[in-house]
Image (cartoon, rainbow, N blue to C red; front, side, top):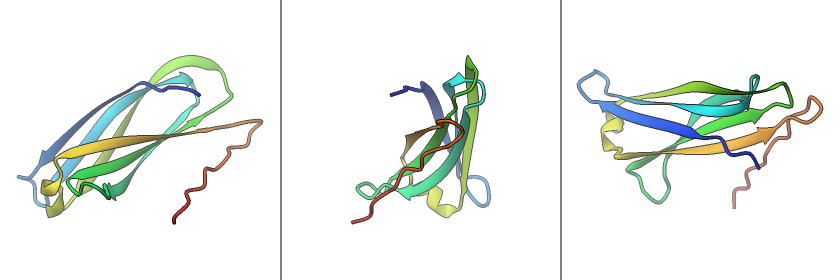
Length: 108
């Protein structure tokens, strides 16, 4: 299992119209061509004051070389004032022989 170090910061600006929540950070990767994508999951099911953001990391089998990659997520609307916390959930997938396995999320 690969561990990707992450640094994250979040700022809610309610003076903008509409209000905006900015989430930005960086992740340390082990391959130069690893990919990073950010998306929102929405409010946490157990705590509606927490926004869950997905940080999807696609680990390649390419040339090794530690690199730091920035990421950014922005949410707009009056609802951003309701959030007190952001959780960044890392999802790591691996490329093997040019193929990336896809993780299946089970809903029960």
